[in-house]
Amino acid sequence: MSEALNILVIGDIIGKAGRRALAQHLPALIDMHRIDFVVANGENLAHGFGLNESVASEMFKLGVDVLTNGNHCWDQREFLELIDEDDRYVRPMNFTEFAPGRGWTIQETGLGHRIAVINLIGQTFMGPWDCPFAAVDRAMDEIPDDVSAILVDMHAEATSEKMGMGWYMDGRASFVYGTHTHIPTCDETIHASGTAYQSDIGMTGSYQSIIGMKVEGALTRMVQRLPQRFEAVERGGSIFATMVTINPATRMATSIERIHIPPA
Image 1 (tube, rainbow, N blue to C red):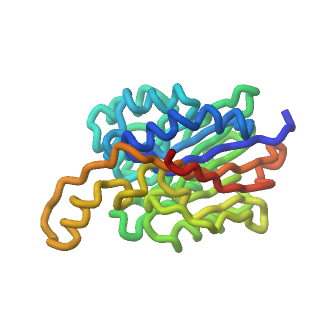
Image 2: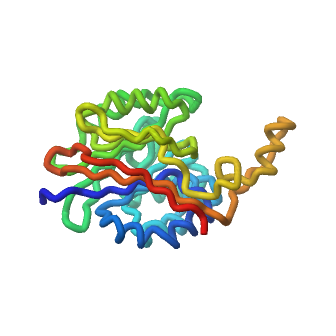
């Protein structure tokens, strides 16, 4: 099993607009680019807040292999139990030790390659989480040596913190990438020791919005500084994703390419 691995990473999927866009395009993307493995951030799948079994099942049927999470992980209460029942879900490794679920998982491709996915959450502007650097070291100690690729979703606000994780994992992870800010960055690169890096994959959802939410409610809260209910935009979703090609013999990246599919 020495052939190159094509891995597709999808950033935060925002509600119905994001799910519709993937239903329309993801199967064709997988075929066109000969994708072996798909990982997506699912913390905004259900109306923009958390995920549940119904919306996650949609993604798995379309070809997503693993769903990572972030600060909206527990917004849907059923997920507290669901995450313990299915190892295709991960939540940030540096959550409290009392959190259900797992911070990393391993899933196999159709050809038998074992892919490890680690989920982390940042500390800057994000809350009182444990240290993500110590957490990723624990994950690396636990992950067996027979994996063909290691992916790290760094769900964080600060670009500097994401970049720090990229350099910290250079030569150890196959791809370190950011999620959470919902805005794609064009800094995709391969670091000196072979780890691919991108500060944020960007969201898959409607960009006729404020980070996926209806403009009216978000703008009213900004201007009036009063509580407002946020609602995810339901139509006009764009797909932002990144494809990384990895040599399974070394686990290091050989190419990285951003993918953008605008709304029809």
